[in-house]
Length: 552
Image (tube, rainbow, N blue to C red; front, side, top):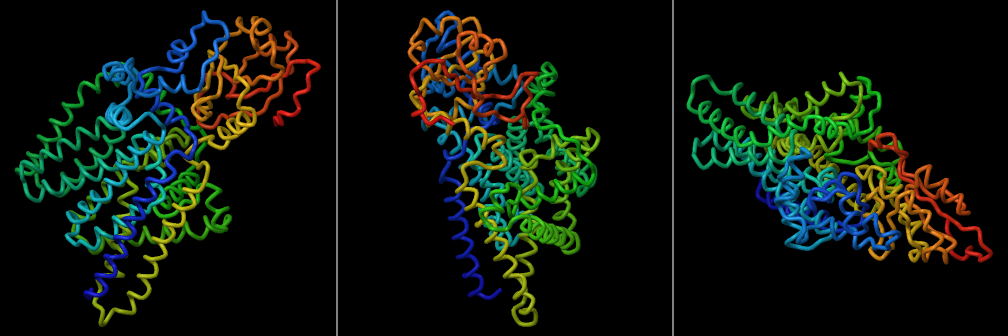
């Protein structure tokens, strides 16, 4: 590659890296809080919904009015929820602690808000960019490939989506890339520092997410496949893995002690019947997410692609990924392509097998595949760099004329789809996000009206997304008898969140007319026989007209 092309390429890649930073920090608080983020808020506070409600509105205080702001106060770090309480909650409920402890410290340091909480994932996602560059240097020894992979990762739709998510997904991607690069460095140099960094990354990965164990198995298989038995490298590797595994032993105990809750954690997704063909289609979508996002209808709507977008872009991206994997196998040493293949297969294969045997699409959701997305981008970065940038300019210049536009189109697609995502009010990863927004939009039309909330089934998802000044009253069925002797007697319209059948009967007895305004569909949550969250409007039969409220 001549000097002019090299300078031009590096300059363009630096611009893309800057755009990637911009994508990760804007509109962090725009989209609604969903179930996974609600769980994060519960973990970093150390309180369940019921415990928060009891603190701000005890059952003995009939119809006490509290604000959404009061509810959210106990969802962020304060003097009552110290780190010991949070660790105990994580341990007893069987959640890997690393991300939640980091999130607790982050929010305590920089402020209590959803935007601040999500900014942690944005920072972690950006730190993955230098890690993928380092990994490419260890694999190929060519800086241009690392820059291409870094640029691709920085504007990857799936990376930007999870950079806006208050969850451990960005942290897991970062640790997987770090551990892979550190392993190659340690095998290459045999330095104690390299082995120490690799061992620390293994410990962090195990305490980050349980699925990291698949990555560890892949790394074990990789080392065994490239190193002869009874070598110093293999001995050092075995010792580091043993120490890291022993460091996770305290948390391994809680996995077995609370196995039932662990099984609940793996069954929160919608359990749809899944065939082999369905698995293939699902994987086609997942692989394409590294470069374009056509999963959400909004992407096609805003981009003007319609269904054509899926049927056009997805086959092209799959062909590109498939050819890049073939090229890696054909042109790189065993130590290079096996590292990438084991990194992908060690996570993908167990999840596919589990879903095929279960007949459900529980595990092959994008959030579970975060460890392998960057490796698809490494494959394609190797292809585009070798074909478009590293060929001799004399006898193969015609070849470059085709591959450079392909690289430009692929990167441009990532930028475009990231832009579409940032403008949207919600996205496919916010399961039920549109329904949550419908709840909040209805309430905003009459912000001064109080909302009665079923104390036994409060559905905090809705509460998280309401304005801080909205008034809440947590009630049980017996407390509804007192509605006529409180200030509610002066109102002929009230909102009610999740009234059960007993409550509805009591309200009708008190001459309230009930009208269902919105209902959250049962997408991926387990309600234990309860109906999905509902928002009702209660209207008292009275001569005072209230049509000017313009409630829908």
